[in-house]
Length: 467
Image 1 (spheres, rainbow, N blue to C red):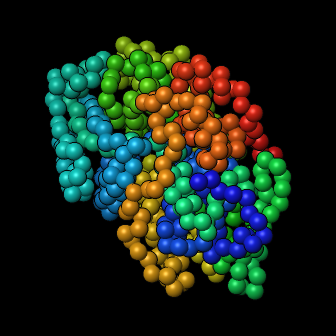
Image 2: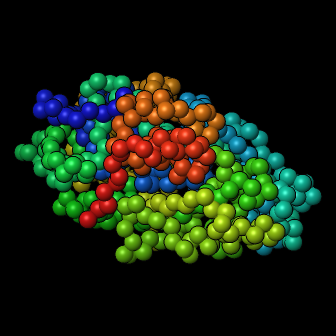
C-alpha cells in the first residue's frame, strides 16, 4: 500500500504530480484507475497542510447561494453525496442548525428560500431541511442567546475525516503497481528536454538525498503554495493565488451545551461552524488575508484569531464562559483562493486550469468537496492528448484499500494496529502517525494512557522545519 523509493528502471512515468494533497490524490487515483503510470512527489506528508486543515466538512457551500453561484453548489452537493456513499467509514451526514436573530444577515424568510434551493440542488438527496420558531429553536439548542432570536433553520451536510480521505485515494491508486507516491520529496528543478520530456529533480526532506524522475506530463497540484513553487522553479508565471488563512479550535465537548452542529453568523459577515465530533467540538474558521511575512508551511493560529472564535462562541452562548482553558488543541491552514478584486469571503471557489508550458498544467482553486471533479476536468485534457479514452465511471467505484484505523474515537486502537500502520501506510514522522494515520491533533484527544506511552516510545523522526 505504501509508495516505494524508486530504482533507476522505475524513474520513467507518464505523469508526475507535484503535490500530494487532496487534489493531487484525486488526480493520482483517477490516473491509476485508467492504467496511466503516475508518480506523486509531496514535499511534506500526504494530505497534510491545507488538506487536513479544513472544517472537516463535505458540503455544497450554503453561503454561496447568496452570490447566485448555483453551479458550484450543485456540483459540490453531488460530490458530497457521492463520497457519503463511497466512504461511509470516513463520512457522515449530520444536521446543522442556523440560528437567526433580528440583526442577522440572513432573515428567516431568506433562510427558508435558501434551504429549499439547497435541497433542490441536491435533487432532494439531502435529508430535508426544517424551519423552527424561537421556542422550538431554544428547545433544541440549550443555552443559546434568547435576545432578538427569531428562530432557526436546520439542514443537512456531511462531515469527513479530511486527512484520511486523501490518504485512501492515494492508497487506491497504489493498487496499480506501475504507480508510486513519495512523501517528503521536494522538487528542486524541472528541465524540459527538447520540448519532449520533463526531468524532475527532487530532494528528500528528511535525509537530503537527491534523485530524479522523468515524465511526458507534469502537473502542479500545490494549492496555496503554487505561486511560491513556480517562482522557486523559475517557471514563467503570474501569481494567481489569494491566500486566505483559517483557524480552527478543538474545544472540550462539555464546553457548550449542544449535541448537534451549528452555523453562526458573525457581526462582520463571516460564517463559523460549530461541530460536535471526535469526543470534542470543532469551531472555525476565521478566514483572514494572509500576512505578507507569514509562512504558509506549518502555519499556526494567532492569539487574535483564537480570541475571535472564543468571543463569537460567548456571544451566542452567554452563560457558557468558554475560555482558553476549554481548548484541547488548535490548527490553522491556508485556502488557495483565486485572485479577484473581491474579498476572500466573496471569492468564488471555482477551480482553474493553467497551461504555462507544453504538457505542463497547474490546477488551483476549488473546494475540498469538489476535488474529484477538479481532477476529472484536468485528466480529461491530458488523457485526450495521450490518446486515452476517459471513463467517468471509474472514480465512482468504492475504494479498494481503507485505512487500518478509520476512527480512533469509536474503536480501540491497539499496538498491533500501530505496527501495521508503520509497516503499510508510509509513515515517516511522529506527526504522520499521530495527525493523519490516527487523525489525532494530539494525544489528549485519544485519552488512552497505554497507547500514548507506546507512541511516545517509538523512534520516529520529527518534521524538519524549513530553513
